[in-house]
Length: 288
Image (cartoon, rainbow, N blue to C red; front, top):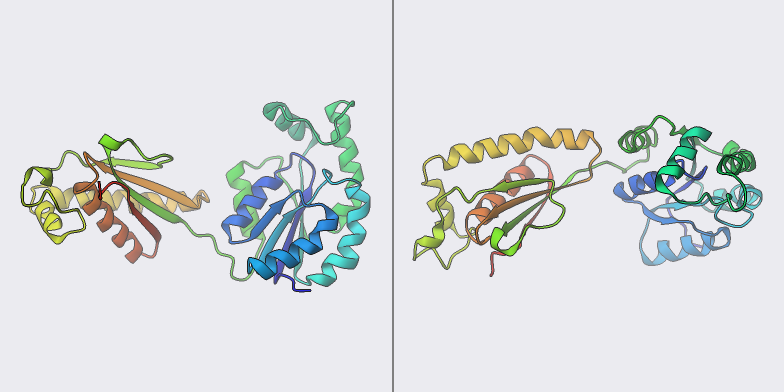
């Protein structure tokens, strides 16, 4: 049977933050699946390794699977660790008060709650998972962690060769007349610059053409504006990276999304790439 090079098993108490650890691993390039039944783990590993070329795999398993607490320890020791020698088990927990508060805030039922009070369900799960916890390579109490702190802690303590945190910067140029793009983190309006649209010879061209670039560079204050824009963006990017943000989307808009925003967005993207950032440039409206 073909198996992945690395396998991370995420388990622990319900409401302790397993989904956030899963998303962190996904940001690190892991192929992850949540709530996988024990009997499907081996077929799943074989399938994704063969067809998805997944060398690093993460799975979330917990008490949502029937008889998980009694079945998993033996399966982990006798099957999983032999199948994938580089297997790491992460166990997450939190105080009863914190877990109860989290369930109260989300209004979701605890998997073991059913006809019993929430605190009793939390206590029952904690006791049932004692043996599972004893197998863990890494145990994290998330009681005092924010989402960002939990992500940072996993990345700091969970060291796997080749797994590096990166920040992907997406630059979207657009025309305000066609609406704003969704999910922008930063938005810059460059409609204050002279519009090449009103120069008949330049109207058919786009911000990717050298004639538009030269036209903008010849405008008073343009170079000063661009330097300040680049300085601002490069000043903020390390802060976003420190906050463990994996994706940052910057919108640059002009009236039609064809000339000014395209030229500036292209230049900004190329300059950020030259500084070592991963950059994707999308000119949404320049062909309209």
